Amino acid sequence: MTYHTGYEKSAHLYDLFDTKENIEFFLHYGSEAKEILDIGAGTGRIAFPIAEKGVNVFCVETSPAMRRQLLRKLSARPDLLEHLCLVEGNAMSFDLGRTFPAAFLSGSFDHFLNDQERSSSLLNIARHLNPKGKLVFDVFLGFMKDTPLSPAGVVKKGNMEYRRFVGGKLLPDETRETILVFEVYQSGKLIERVEERSLVGVIDREKLHRLLGKTGFGVQREFGDYDFANFQNGHSLLIIEAVKKN
Ligand SMILES: C[S@@+](CC[C@H](N)C(=O)[O-])C[C@H]1O[C@@H](n2cnc3c(N)ncnc32)[C@H](O)[C@@H]1O
Image (tube, rainbow, N blue to C red; front, side):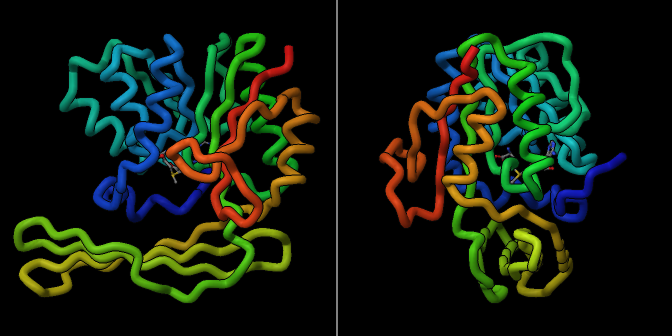
C-alpha cells in the first residue's frame, strides 16, 4: 500500500527550501557510527552529506515522489553509490533482516498519526538496532494550535522565484491537517502552484517518553534545537537521543 504523507506533488520543490540547519546535527551522530539507518529519508537531504563522509546510509522511504528525487540526485553522484542505498518501505513494517548501530528520523516521526503507528514504528526500529543502538529523532511539539496559511520562505534563482506558504488546522483526533502551498514564478509570472494537504500526529513529551519506555528505549539526552541546547519546557521542537535498552 502506498502511504500518502503529503509530498507527492511537491517533492521536486522540497530541497529548495532546505535551511540545512539540522544537517550538521545529524552529521555529528552519523560520523560516530559506521552505518546509519535513515527512516523517512525523503530526498536524501541528510543522507547525502553523511554518505559523503564515507558512512554507509540505508534510507527507508515510503513516498514514491521523494524516492524519485533521491534517486535522481544519486544518479548524479555515482561516487556515493557504495555508501548510500534506498529501500522502499514504511517505518512500521520495513524489514532489512539485519541490525545497525544507529537510526535517524528527521522530520518523519510527526507523520505517525497515533500511538499504534508510533509503537509499531518504534518496535520495528528497535528490531533493526544493535544492543545499545541509538535512535535520534525530532518531534515538533508546536502543532497544538491552528495557524493560518502564512508565508514560509522565498527562494530566488535567476529569473525564478519560489514561494512557500504553510498553515494548519487541529483535528479532533489528535492529528493536524497541514497545508503547504508552493508558488513558482518565472520573470514575475506565476507558472506553477502546488497545494499539498497532509496529516501529522500531535503528541506531548510525557506521552512520548512513555511510548519510548514501552518499546524498549531509554531517553539519554533531549535538545531544544539543532545546536545541542538542552530542551526546556515551552520549546516547540524536541530532539531525542534514545538508546535501545538491551
Ligand atoms: C519532513 S520529510 C523529511 C525528509 C528528510 N528526512 C529530511 O530531513 O529532509 C518526512 C519524510 O518522511 C517520510 N515518511 C513519513 N511517514 C513515513 C513512514 N511511515 N515510513 C517511512 N517514511 C515516512 C515522508 O514521505 C517524507 O519523505
